[in-house]
Amino acid sequence: MELATCRAIIVGGASGMAKATAQRIVAAGGKVAILDRGQSAGAEVAKELGGTFHEVDVMDAEGTEIVINEAAEALGGISVSVNTAGGGVAKRTMSKDGPHPLDSFKFTIDLNLIGSFNVSRLAADHMSRNEPNEDGERGVIINTASIAAFEGQIGQVAYAAAKAGIVGMTFTMARDLGTLGIRVNAIAPSLFATGLTAGIPDEFEAALTKDAAFPKRMGRPDEFARMACQIIENPMLNAGTIRLDGGQRFAPK
Ligand SMILES: NC(=O)c1ccc[n+]([C@@H]2O[C@H](COP(=O)([O-])OP(=O)(O)OC[C@H]3O[C@@H](n4cnc5c(N)ncnc54)[C@H](O)[C@@H]3O)[C@@H](O)[C@H]2O)c1
Image (cartoon, rainbow, N blue to C red; front, top):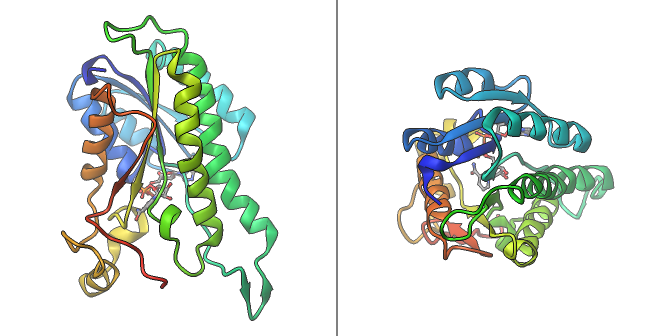
């Protein structure tokens, strides 16, 4: 799919990797709707990019459905969904305070896995109504996993489970949606310089990325954006989770 023809919902688009993706899509001539929380910089980012801002909390499933409908209306349909809304809690399965609280485990699954599934299924519904392009494509869905899905560190059990769920659903969702001409991929980043991690001092960055093959540094938001745009543009990229990690494998801690 050509970037210039994209009508993209960018969930988490007020900041970091999703914002960089929105910037690239708009620079190539596509249209974006920024979906993010009310307290985010989403309105400013949307204005800067000539798009619309739609306040959403992906933990609110019904609210998300309403907001995606509004975004589809503003864009004239949805052909691309990029979602980075997510995060985690740092807790071990068992610690001196007792077993991992179940509510924070459920919260992490809700935010990352259920949130991504909900956005994907609703976006797919809109995409299914698109006229296919000359390659038969109606849409592209991109979710955000993490290399913690494969080698979660100590204290990342909820986050690793949630991100592994995103990896797990990607292949099957691509099969489910293949007959509609909708592709589904996930990107699994290592540490990227976004949000809180953007302020990490150099010496900590060196320690946190010492296990990478090359480059031994955090990823940059635009490196995620380049991958997301390649997924959008390349029809053979489907059903996969692409590690974006400089060859890093997380150590146990
Ligand atoms: N930055 C990293 O090192 C890294 C590494 C691996 C995976 N990830 C994943 O990337 C995503 C975070 O993206 P980023 O690193 O660009 O961070 P970021 O903080 O710069 O951007 C995330 C955006 O998502 C929004 N968001 C968070 N919760 C939301 C909710 N409930 N509803 C709607 N919007 C919400 C935030 O307001 C923010 O604008 C997460 O899914 C995270 O697990 C990040």
